[in-house]
Amino acid sequence: MTWRVHNFNPGPAALPLPVLEQVQGDLLDFAGTGMSILEMSHRSATYEQLHNQAIADLQTLLGGTEDHAILFMGGGAQMQFALVALNLLASGSYAEYLITGVWSETALSEARKIGDARVLWSSVSVMYASTRSSSTALNRAATSSSAMLSSSSRSTSSSGKSPKR
Image (cartoon, rainbow, N blue to C red; front, top):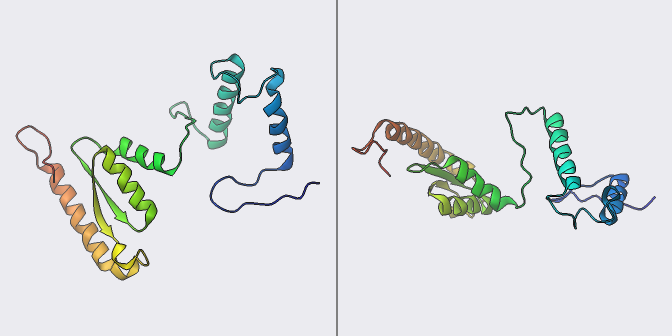
């Protein structure tokens, strides 16, 4: 058997050798088509069958229903941060972020491309070393924010829209 290294860093996980061997073979000739899945049109019947089977398998594994769509999308963390803002940051509203390090700063940056994204609290002053030392300030900010969100949802301008803060 081949000596295998397991990668515990973020990203791909270790796969069983038989899975890797099947993938290796399919990269040269997928399902007897004479071409790699990487070379195949995403509109071909062979790819459509693979795509639909993958969706069905995931729905079974995750216990999903037809009420939930499964999407296969490229991209990484930044795209996920943008998708959160695209789906949750409605026009005329705002999102507040707790800045605890590089990932939350990246999420804030992506959200600001979509709409009004604000810093509720940040640990930048302590070089992101702690959130505990500022827990009182964090609780105060969260309480203040909740009150502000409650009042902004009740108050509207003459146009019927909530005022921008």
